[in-house]
Image (cartoon, rainbow, N blue to C red; front, side, top):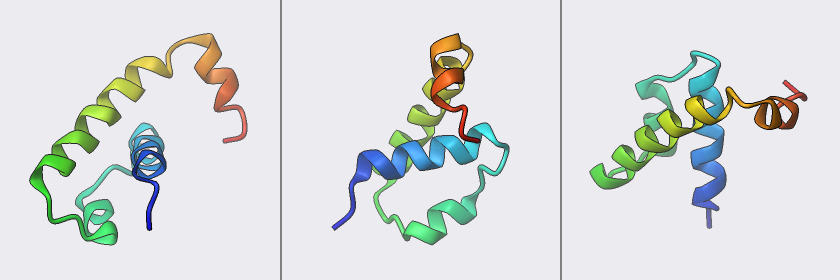
Amino acid sequence: YYNFSNILFDIALYSSQKFYSIELFKTFDLTSKFFKVTIIIESAEFKQRKKTKKDKQFLGKN
């Protein structure tokens, strides 16, 4: 059982670090096109959100 919210967040973190690639999709073996689109949307929103000071503080462990 996977926590899909955590997976989306992890992929968003990879995206913000410029590691975003099809390899992530292969790793999770996602067959749902809808879920892939959701990941892309979540990643894009995360990129915008991480510009705020609060999110930068939250990501301070990088």
